[in-house]
Length: 368
Ligand SMILES: NC(=O)c1ccc[n+]([C@@H]2O[C@H](COP(=O)([O-])OP(=O)(O)OC[C@H]3O[C@@H](n4cnc5c(N)ncnc54)[C@H](O)[C@@H]3O)[C@@H](O)[C@H]2O)c1
Ligand SMILES: [Zn+2]
Ligand SMILES: [Zn+2]
Image (tube, rainbow, N blue to C red; front, side):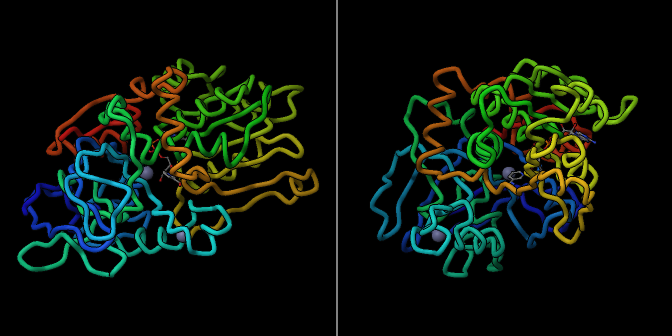
């Protein structure tokens, strides 16, 4: 069959919208029609060479849609099921899955790194040449073939144009707060970067009962949105004093916060989390910094028993957490509609990337 998709032929160049050939699902695979896809900063980072990628590659990894056809061996999904595409296939057999850490499933590393199916081949092609798809999801395509394990079923009452965000940004952010950090009731929290991921961290911290949530972002509209979603204070990192001094001055006893999250993907902001922690506080790094970069932390913080931890995919167990986060949305606890700045057509994807580069808007969602 044919499908229209947005593909990266070369890093740092606009995506091209073209028709591609798509083969049907093989053993353990599913043909999905995406109805919507969010645009995450990780798509932007691949396009701009901050994260590694392959070319030509259909980008997008935050999608939801409807199962069209299942390949041999797929027993838990059927035509018509509504699903959210997830980053980890949770193979259930690798050492990480056996340790109950499917968010680090070894198959996930293969799908993210290879950007093709687990059998090493691609289902997309153009003029007989293979075309890769990001994380073997490729949600910037109306149709895609994905591993069955990469889909989690949701009820027909969940609007796919909204809950697609749960596929990446929301699970990453809410999960970082409620799973990775287990933010405690009454805690003080700072979140650096209030895009889709940071706003989700803020909501996770609110749901867990944090009493002080400081949103750090240079864009005033982002801070306002953060306050409407649960932040109690806003900080412009470029205002006098800089982010560390300002956050510390607001924190209980001016000691620093219990938890500082980085949700941007930069070395300087990662280092800032360490500086704004109170003794024995915890820095949680969610942003994806260029993997070759080095981070410098003051040794003094070690004597203060500070801790720093990365968070991958919100330490999520997709089959438990995706339906849980969708339920929180349906009950009104988790606000997702407010995080969607624009619903756009696939053809407008490059404009949405430009806006993301300027820090405008929280999430743009492509609606097919
Ligand atoms: N760990 C994971 O599993 C995982 C999963 C998804 C995304 N990510 C990463 O999370 C990060 C955030 O993604 P996103 O989609 O929310 O990005 P985004 O582009 O939507 O948001 C980034 C925000 O940072 C703000 N910002 C810019 N400069 C700043 C500064 N100096 N201080 C504070 N804020 C600043 C921008 O105004 C914007 O609001 C990215 O690095 C992305 O790759 C990680
Ligand atoms: Zn993402
Ligand atoms: Zn596994």
